[in-house]
Image 1 (tube, helix red, strand yellow):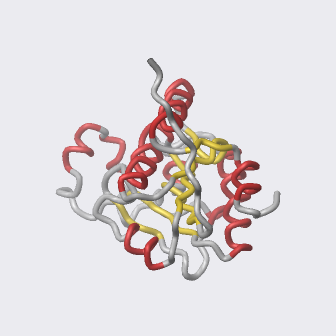
Image 2 (cartoon, one colour; image 1 turned 60 degrees about the vertical axis):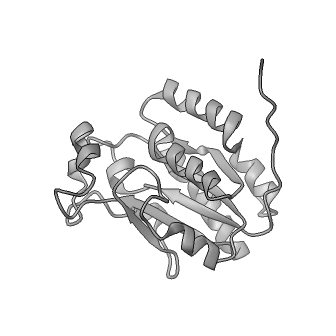
Image 3 (tube, one colour; image 1 turned 30 degrees about the vertical axis):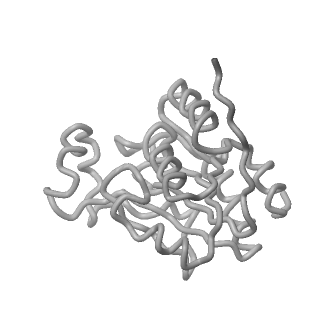
Length: 198
């Protein structure tokens, strides 16, 4: 038997969370990256619209300064070791560069909320909903969206503004997120929903 799921009211002051749009994920030259040009383009539409409305915008990036940080995660996925804090892969893709006042939360694990200041910042901004974009759908996007719900935010995942190197995993995780944790909406629907225009 299929469980009932309901779309939730999304509030009046949504925050846009851009998960791991670092060059390590947006560049095919990095072992963790892929060709996500269209995902970046769609995320940029949301960034511009949210800025125009004065809604909060923030970013996450995965980076490591010490071998002990997230040692089990890194042992399981050794490619993460390229994300050294002083390396070339941890900066936000210039196409989505943060503006002044838009923080970049450093994280060591999948979720943008785990051991970061993201929740405190969202509350300080008066955010009453979270729109999640980023890379990758089956990993850090999913973990961040689930944790947003677990921090009691209504959550939207912007379908074209998330991506994954594994298309079946991308589709399966969007299906599962929509069934249980978030409203998966097109970018056009998100823009219309919050009165941001196209």
